[in-house]
Length: 273
Image (cartoon, rainbow, N blue to C red):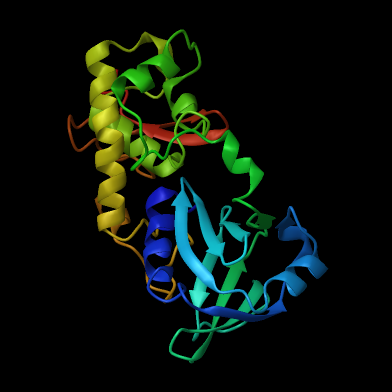
């Protein structure tokens, strides 16, 4: 599933070509993936609108348009946003045709094999569901005391709380496993049992690992590619995620897989306490 670094990679690439571009028409859409609007509204409202900016909160892309509307995109588990040369196939759910600021037409294609992604068209702000999100896990206005307050008294496993998007927006299964390995914290620890020093370490590592993911242009462990169809590089540096049965690169113990909050979780029981 694309997490914050993957979505930020897409945002940076779209920010180079979308601002100033004008939507011409919607050539293909998948009604089942629409939220906060219907097929007719999307087709009628987008043409003629120019893109003002491309933002992000957590795993959501926010495309601000002139005169009020806002296009919010969520890639779901297998979503891909591709520009121009990408072929249209049976998994291409949306095709948006635009004219760039230079006058050259181009297309933005939303491909999603499982159709869990979502396209929201709203007025006066991004999709309402974003109001339920916590601060952005990488660039948001939060610190160790904030995180300590959100963990305090929680008996749920630490991994489950890190995946709660109302606590921090953008952390998902891959980066949560990596953060916990680097901090030496067990995903099974009760979230409210961390010491002040452990919370401080966790806070620093969350931003550090997400920043590394952004620097390496995302993690292509499964479906993720950027707008040009290129893979990221973070998968080459994974220390925990997907390494079940392999030796821990810190202590040599055997990496173990468990299920936490319905998600497969890999950690080292010998050095993650």
